[in-house]
Length: 130
Image 1 (cartoon, rainbow, N blue to C red):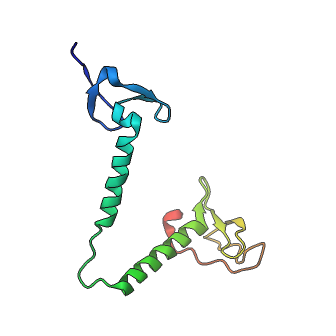
Image 2 (image 1 turned 180 degrees about the vertical axis):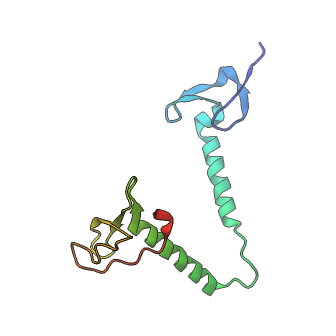
Image 3 (image 1 turned 90 degrees about the horizontal axis):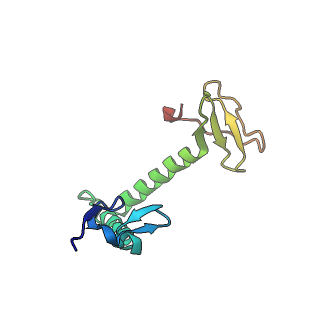
């Protein structure tokens, strides 16, 4: 009997159509490799290798690594403190000291302090949220 090749929608590879099985998490018919989890493991290993192969410019040392990590942490902290509220000019602000969430208007700069603990709100420097 001739096996009809069918394209797997998860890994985009061809496999015999009669070997496909219904996968519970993908909620579709997948090839035997995807059903057993081999494809997912292979993709995770590729991501790890790409991350390890990150090439640094010549002259890169521990100080530069520390500064890069500090800059990433600062950006992440700024992003996590403010989030845009869809449909309004306001942003959702999270206080750094007490974790209280409240609405902040960056144009009027109101409120000046956290309504719960009174800590000063850091200035919103990224206008990508607006």
